[in-house]
Structure formats: structure tokens, C-alpha cells
Length: 285
Image: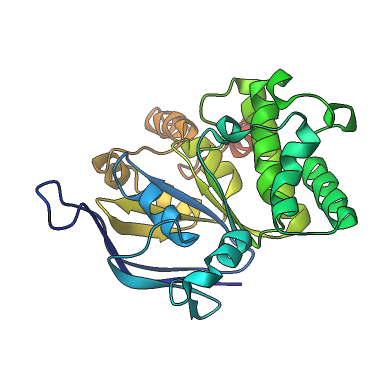
């Protein structure tokens, strides 16, 4: 399933003194199975864009095509669009409300009128994907840690078997352990299910580690798109937009300035470890 966005424009409070153009003639495509990172400074249009993708907001101009069909052409089909394109808002755990973890994750499939067997199958599969153990199923979600709550909330979206999952700042506000749990769950989800994932994040480290392609938003437009290496090589351009490259890249730039023979396109801890180990071996020979 592909998503095509054609000349999308959105204006808040159009025709009033508070009019603001949040998206300005945005065109892009997200292909089936892609893992895309969406980055941009606050106010760049990221949140407005993702709310268009599953029909929460209707365009002022332009269109969103899901497998070639305009999602706003038939408003009666928006419920199915929202099942196919699942959106986990920032701090999704604030939407938890059921008495048990199992019931909370089952809420969506139940509303979709699935059979009892289907509901159970989808709930268990979703909870296993995000790494929630069976002994937590009957616990209150409010007794869980922050990272566990976040994973349960994401499981509630997954239980409806979306073809695309949009995650808005999934690690925001979590401690290091919770961040690692969420990132591992997202990585496992993409690897095991092969669904399209769109990750909105301010963490350049998370984006560099996980995604195949980055879309950079700036002032309501797509500023650039490319692989992490292609995008993060342009540090000065990113900084001009209020962004930055991953911290590791600044370390390697400093090493280069001091005369060390190291590449400057290193963006993850794993890459950095491998390069430095090789450097140590060369020095010790």
C-alpha cells in the first residue's frame, strides 16, 4: 500500500486574523514497507501532515491518495482509512482507560465487530510484538511503568492490523530504559510485520538508528528527503533549520579536525564503535 500526497496545503483559521499556513504545497510518496523518519523544528508542519494521513484533518488544497484513491472522496470510508493507517499520538498512554491491559488493547478490535477468536488472536499478537509479557495482561494499565504504558498504547493501534503505523514522538518523556524498550519494539515490529512505519521524532539519534529514509520539514514544506547518511551530511543546512545531526557525528568531525583518519559520515553508536575499534587495531599494529 502506497501513500501519495499531491500539492497538499493546509491553512488554520482560514479567512480570520489568525490565519496560518501550516502546510504549503507538499508533495511526496511513502511506499509500502518503508521505514520513514519525519523530522523538523517545532512548527515545521510535521504534526499537521501526519493528521492528514489518516483523515483527521481535511486539506485546504491538494489530496492524499491511498492506493491511488483520494481518502477524502468518500467520508463514509474514513473509518476504514483510520484502521489501515494507525496513528499513535504523542503520549498515547493518556488514552488508556480500561480496567486491564488486555481489555484496553481489545477495545479497537471489539469496535470493529471482530469475532471473539479474532480479537484474542490480534490482542495477543500485538502485545507480543511490543514485548508485553502474559503475566501483565490482567493488570491495570495504570500500574505499569511509563515505557510499558507506551507499549500497551501502541499495541492498541497494532491490534487493528494497520498497514501503516505513524508514531508521533514515541520516546518523549521516557527514561533511558523506557526509550530502549520502545525503540526495540518499533524495530521488531517493522522487521517481523513488514508494515510501513512513519516515525516523527526530535531525536536525531533514534532516527539515524532506525529509519531507511528521512523527510525534513521546514516552514510547512519538504526541505529535503534522503537516506540518513544523505541528510545528516548537510549539518549546516540542518542547523539553519533549527535541527542538528546526531551527536556522534560531531564527535567524529572533531576527531577529523585533530588529524585522526576517520570518516565524517558516522551517525550511530554502533557505527562509531566499529570505526573506533578498527582505528585502535591499526594504531596497535
